[in-house]
Image (cartoon, rainbow, N blue to C red; front, top):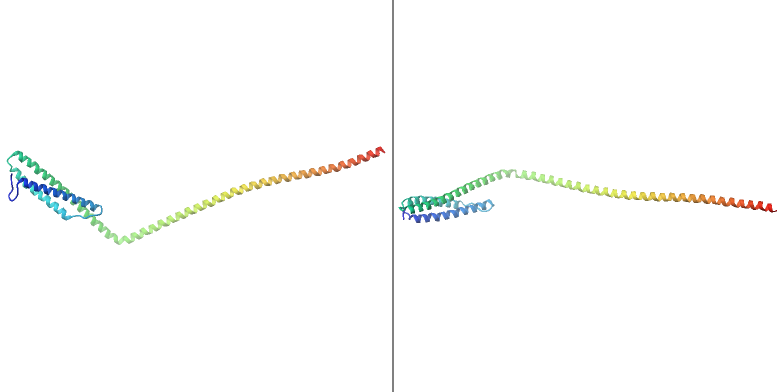
Length: 228
């Protein structure tokens, strides 16, 4: 097995590179979990962990350069092709981890820049916060006044509607009472007419009685004279 000066064999270097890959991948996952915690409003960034992952990836690339020289010195073509594929796989994984770390670093820098801008905005807004709060308070008071006025108008409208309904009910009762009074008056008027007719009939009957009595006396007088 090929070996490098001051180092191990190709297999030993490969195993070292695989261990560094595992550690770097675990570091990337931890950084992403920390990033999620920061985005959710909790947790802190870890520059030390980011630096450690970057160092591991640089060391992996250095080992890949060593392995690239080692597998080229292998005599057997089949073994040479096998180690070539293994080294290329390690290089690809290392490049993928480096790309993930670069993206994380860019997101972290952007997040830090946004935090700085927010701090500057908050610093400028502190001087105007009292004025803004006063404006909001005045607007809230105006809205409350409008709501109170609207409620008073609704209550006044409801009261007016109730009063008009009472007036309508009273009007209907007055109409019914007026109709009853007219019916009573009509009945009284008819009774008076009948009484006057009866009284007139009684006077006529009385005159007929008196005339009949006079005629009877006259007839009896003439009959007595005629018989004597």
